[in-house]
Each structure stands twice: as structure tokens, then as C-alpha cells.
Amino acid sequence: MKQKHIGITIIETLTLSYLLTGILLCTLALLMYRTDINQSAANLGVTLIYIIASLLCGIFVGKKMKHRKFLWGFLLGLLYFLILFCISCLLKQDAQLITKERITTMFLCIGGGTLGGMLS
Image (cartoon, rainbow, N blue to C red; front, top):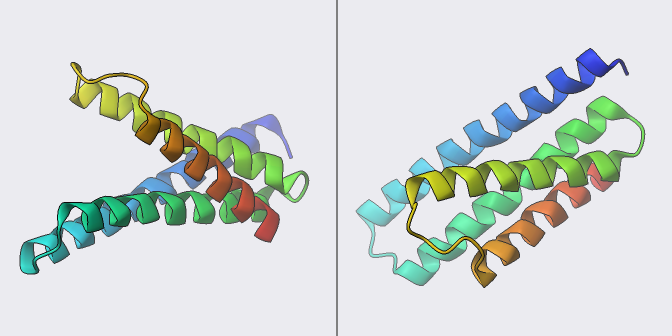
């Protein structure tokens, strides 16, 4: 695959995964508004959304790339997390940069992307 097509595929994949993330997070927010979901259940929901989005991201990029699918899934899972991390740092400028929750989220996103690449 040509370098130009690789860049377009990466941008398309990340865009789709963030659209999915946005839709699922809005759905979760609506559920929280309509029901009495506690904070720990909401946190679990957010984590599952990140895993699902990175998994689908890995599947999509794996189908497009054809070779070394798991590595592409790994890369897209990492990029997905890094963008989330940067947005989080911009929105919460006084927050601690490295926490165990962020490290866990990073590994879950990378794992989801890698698994998605392997399943594609």
C-alpha cells in the first residue's frame, strides 16, 4: 500500500473510532441521566467504550492493510489512546499526567487495537 493511502487509512480509521466513541459516550450520558447509574458503573462504561472503539479500529485497519494486521492494530490503538490523552491533558491542565488509570487505559486501547487487527 502506498504511503499516501496508509495516511488516509489511519485518518479514516481514527475518525470512525472517535465518531463511534462520541456516539457511545452520548448514549452512556443519556443512560446516566435517565437512570440511577452510579459512578463506578459509568467509569466501567467509559472503559468498555474505549475498548470497543479501539477493537473496531484494529479490525478496520487490519482489513485495509492486509499485512502485519496486529502491528497496525497496535499502532492504531496507541494513536487512539494518545489522542485521548492529549485531549484529556488540554481539558484538565492541572491534572496529574501519569496515573495508574491512564496507564491501564493505554494498555486496554493498545490491546483492543491489537486484538482487532488479529481478528480482521
